Image 1 (cartoon, rainbow, N blue to C red):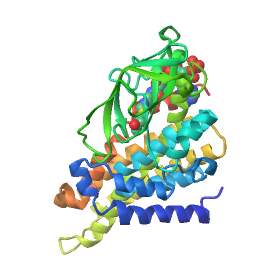
Image 2 (cartoon, rainbow, N blue to C red):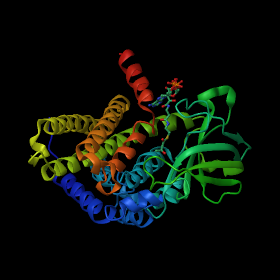
Image 3 (cartoon, rainbow, N blue to C red):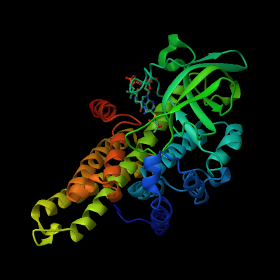
Image 4 (cartoon, rainbow, N blue to C red):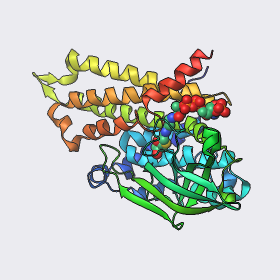
Length: 380
Ligand code: CAA
């Protein structure tokens, strides 16, 4: 067992840390307040290779392992989870899905641009009545011979208005239930494809979340990913890796809040000494540090499973379940350690606390992770 990072992984981690401090940090509060999408920052992340990290260089990607991706997610999320979710969705849900299951033509046409950040993508599974219960797709993609016609609405779509390419999951044959679902590539600007209003969110307010409306949208057959009826499996397989990315995001949010709380506790004085000298604060820091380290081990292990060809449904779900819980608990404690200042935007921890909540919801709520985990352990 080797817990050390390779030299290459350390360099990537440092590059992400530097980028987060120099480029994401300066306007992170303004972006959150104004719900401003980090357009310029996304462009730079594309240049750094953060948007197609695991993609083969022949399709413009960085050709790195999942652990490197996790390290980048962790560092970016310490500072700005609105930016890191863009990285996560583009890498795990869009590029990985296309590279693993797409045709050569789809990869040439879409993946090469997505992996360099020339364009970004969105993954469209959730619906007003199909969130956790993802097999209950109401959006239809009817087979019309050489094309499909999509009708319906998708909800809470990350990169909703900023994406150029949308992977849309929809029901083709209702009688076949989840085996009659397809995943289709839809381009922005397709006739009948409308982007709904932007959601006004509690956290990750810099990210761009929309509903999407499809009214008789024609999609050519060559835009289907995989065999007819593969769409639900595609979504599940893709989300299994996505959950590792969100687990890393949760880990980063927790670690970012902890680092701020640690620093503050050594500077802020009360009752004649730095508050870190009070056991009430020191013990909070001890708990935070321990929980974050435990979460880190789960997240890195899930990445290692994926890199080593092991099944990662269980390890990814456990990593997301636990890291998101740690993110929530740690950020609440970081606000508490900051006292009155913790409630003020300038100190960042209140934003991290708001951002933490979504990690217990998207890419499968904590309750869904428990379904995945319990089914896996019970089947033996
Ligand atoms: N890999 C491959 N196949 C899988 C799978 C996996 N990890 N998980 C399930 N499947 C397959 C099953 O084998 C089954 O196929 P067969 O009948 O051929 O065996 C099929 O999928 C249906 O599975 P279940 O019978 O288990 O379906 P279910 O309805 O009982 O439960 C669920 C499935 C796990 C609860 C699933 O609905 C789920 O994961 N729900 C949560 C959805 C989710 O994560 N949404 C996130 C939205 S995306 C997002 O948030 C992105 C963003 O913008 C940030």
